[in-house]
Image (cartoon, rainbow, N blue to C red; front, side, top):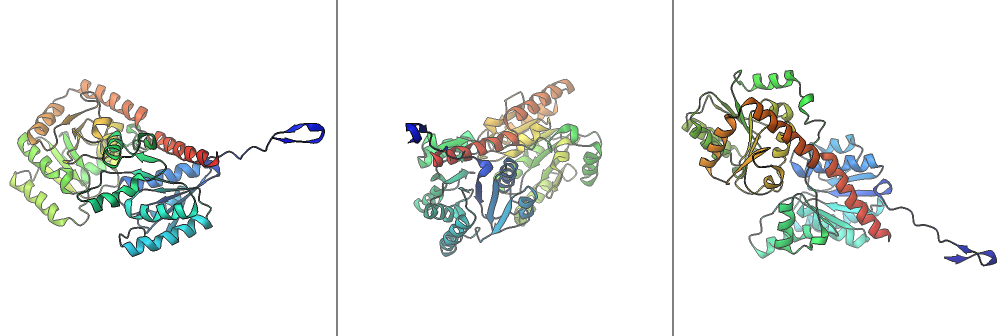
Length: 400
């Protein structure tokens, strides 16, 4: 407060409101390839920042999804953020610091470990707040690896993509609970809306995948990697001993050709050549879910979150998932899906039999509950709003 003429009091000028609408947010990740949750989440948050009126910058080595950043109103800058070479990581500190200064960045948001090391020191050098999203459990077999992982815990705020991951960060890395913000991943409810998936799209996929009319379809989506449980799934289908079903393993092998061949051999060993199809990457997953009667997530290791589970529920499909990780937070047992002990082929076989025997009315009730569960708890809109709230929290703290 200041005194003006005649001893009147003049209020001090108010600080400009701190908010995303007037901020520049920089997200940092290795690459914008096809990838998975990290890349998709980066695009979704860039879109939310731009829609709020802020400026969304993304730094990575680039890739197939780079154009999506521009499409949603953001800007992409290319740096070798994918490299784990210590010399490159060190050089990236200077490069990022220059970007932070030149572009007047207000928050640096790191989404992966190698680029996070560069981002942390660049933010520290420029005095800009640094935060992270903790996307996975990360292997930590030795002290050096734990040290490498720990950079994801050093943000002013640490977003955990599930309560499971939040607990992991707290218990294994000592992240204070008051720094952790649990923000579940979200589904695009415009895209994953059963009313918007046309019968023609579903029929096209069914024809492409040679699925017979009227036969129940079981699908396990996800990239071909051993811990996703494709081999266990095929074994369980064999134990069902049914010829009146069709089963889909949907996902690219990303160079794991030996594993793909191992799965093909397993199909033939179990006499499932007419039953099980291995399908490469699918560009129309909403239609793929809609042509299925059961969706399976059989991961042998805990999923940090598991988008498959909520995408399937958003379209009213029954879900069967391993009883660990994020699935425990997204499935309402017996109401929107079922959980089974991880790695237990007999249990998976039993629950698949149970789901396939559901009558039409029970399936309809389950569909309604599943769709409501996702719309109320796991929408992309809610995920983006909560992330923007974390940005606002940091910006306000910096302004105070």
